[in-house]
Amino acid sequence: MRFKRIFPGVYEINGRLATKNSTKGFRVYDEKLIKFRKDEYREWEPTRSKLAAAILKDLRKLPIKEHSPILYLGASSGTTASHIADVTDGLVFCVEYSKRMMRELLFVCEVKKNMIPILGDANLPQSFAHMTSRVDVVYQDVAQKNQTEIFIKNMDYFKARNGLLAIKARSIDCVEKPKNIFKREVSKLEGKFDVLDVIELSPFEKDHVLVSVQVA
Image 1 (spheres, rainbow, N blue to C red):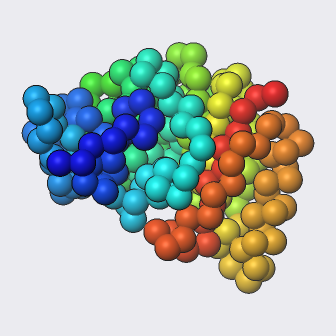
Image 2: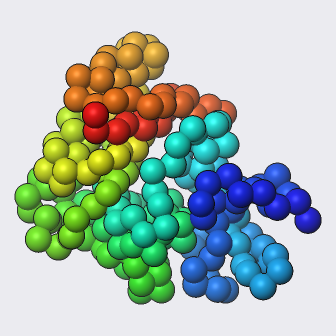
């Protein structure tokens, strides 16, 4: 079996991306479980996770460390958040606006004990801040027109050192060329942060980029 560490907590096993399963035997989205030596790993599907897609497309730095507390905006049913919860044993605060998706997220959080579900609006960080603690990283995957502004607001409010933002062009403008949208949105970030990476996510996700930033 070919085994390679890409980042702390993130591995390539026989050419497939994986995280070490912090809850042995538990699957979140029918992903494959891989046994290697005494440990179990969960295959991390790049078509189901924008962060996995970015890693496979040569993300240079993963700011999520072993003990990092994370604010995850737009956690949905917990697919990517659950892999982040494998990488770190810090708390992953999972903010989700949809009550329907929250029901699915709650099931995952009952098993992954370092995932904290929060029903809330990412536009209003002050409304859920009392349910969080200090965070090192803001990860955002929110399909709203003002997604970049939401990200900046939360980075500022929580004083996070690093951030990862999935920009969805079609949620901002369904007519304008995605490359023009990406250029404009990244320019907003450049005015506030050091932009470390801008990774286009095709063929795994159409009209998406993942942007990695760091506070200067």
